[in-house]
Image 1: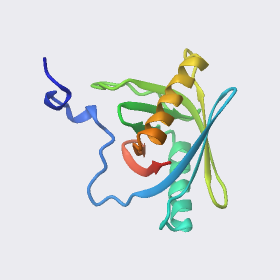
Image 2: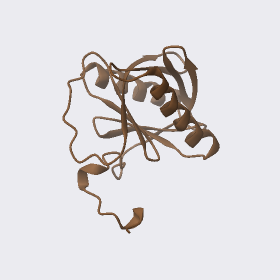
Image 3: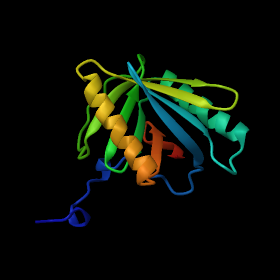
Length: 159
C-alpha cells in the first residue's frame, strides 16, 4: 500500500503550485454562511499595500470577466468559482475532489467580497459541508488557501 508521499503525481494533477518568482498577494479572509451560499471577505494582510491589493483584486475580477475560472485550494479541497462567462472545461488528470460553484466578486475601497453559490446539480448541504471543511482547515488547522485564476496564482489567504 502506497502512502500519499509515494504516489506518482502527474504534472497536471496539481495546477495550484505557485510559480517561482511570482509576486504573491497575501490576504486575510473571513467567511460567513448565508442561506444561499457563502460570503468571503478578503482584506490585505499585515505589511501588504492597499493599492497593490486593489490591483490584484481588480485583476482577479477582470480575469473572471474574461471567462477564466477561479480556483481556491486549501489542503486537499479545491473549489472552482465560475461566472456566467466561464466556458466549461474538460477536467483531465484531476485527482482531488473538486466543487464547482458560481462566484461573484466585488472590489470595494478597503476589501474584496466574493459570494459563492452552488451550481445546478449541487445541493446547498454539500456546499455547506465543503465550506465548513474549508473554514476548519483555515481557522483551526492554520492552513493557507491559495487562489489562482486559470492556473496563475493570485492570492494566498489566511485567517
